[in-house]
Length: 362
Image (cartoon, rainbow, N blue to C red; front, side, top):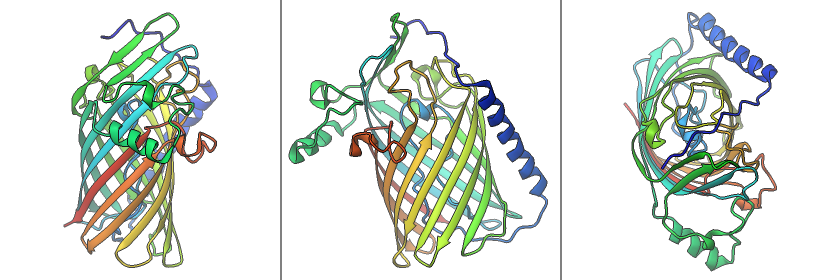
C-alpha cells in the first residue's frame, strides 16, 4: 500500500549541478567533433569487467552504464549476451529521521546486443526481465553465517538477519511524519538502455579509450517500482590499459541526467558513476576479475546511512570456450565483508549478488 508521497529533497549544491551538466554537454560535443574521423578497426576481446553495476532497488530504476572495456567491435560484427543476476537485498539501518526497510530479492534476466557500425563506432541495446520477490537465498546465507560464526548484525542491519522472517519481500521508506511508500512483489520488463560508443584514440594492445552516450527508455512499470517512468541520458568514458601480457586495468567514469521518477519521492536529478577493475589472464582461456563500482545517491530517503554512496565489490571469472564464445560468473558483496570500514571498496548495496552469463560473437 502506498502512502502520501513526501516532498522531494533536492539538496545538491547548484555549483555541482552546473558542473555536471557542463561535463555531459562537453562529452556530447567531443563525440560529435570526432565522429567523422576515421578509426582503426579493433576486435573486442572476450573478457573485461563483469557487466554488473550496483543493482539495489533504487539504482535499478535509472540509467546505469554497465561496466565495459574500451575496445569496439569491427564493422558488421555483432555480440550477444545473456545474463542472470540473483540479488539479495537486506538494508534495515537504525531509523534516523526516516526508516528504511528493504528485505527482498531480485532476479534479473538481461539480454544485450552490440553491433559494430564501422569508423570506430558501435551500437548497443540492453533490456531485462525483473522479478522482485522473497527469493531463494535467505536460508543459504543464514546457513553460511551460522556455519562459520560470521556476525550478521552490521550497521546496515543492527538487529541482524535472524531477527527478520526469512523469505519476505519488503521495500518500504517512511519519514518522520509517517509519509512514504511501500512495495512488495513485482514482475515485468525493466527500462531499456541504448548506447552509442565511439573510439577516442587508436586502440592498441597497450591501451584504448572510448566514449559512450546513452539513452534510457521508460519501458519498465513505475507503479511496480520496476522503472522510473521517465527517460534518462548520460555520457561515459571507458579506458583500458594493459600491464604486460597478463594484466588489464579498466576505468569507467560517467554522468547521468535523470528524468523525474513518478513513484520514487526524493529521486535525484543526476548521478555520477565510476568503475575500477583489475583483470588477470594467466592463459589464453581464463580471466580473473576484481572490480569495484561507484554510484552516487539515486533516491534520498532521509535516512543518513541509507543515503550514502552505493559501492559494491565484485569477484568474477570468465572462461573462453573458443574465440567467439565465453561463459562467466561473479559474486558481489557490500560493506559487510569489512564491517563498512572501506567505503571506497564496498559500501551500501545488495547484501550479496551472484551473476551468471554467456557471451558469443557472430
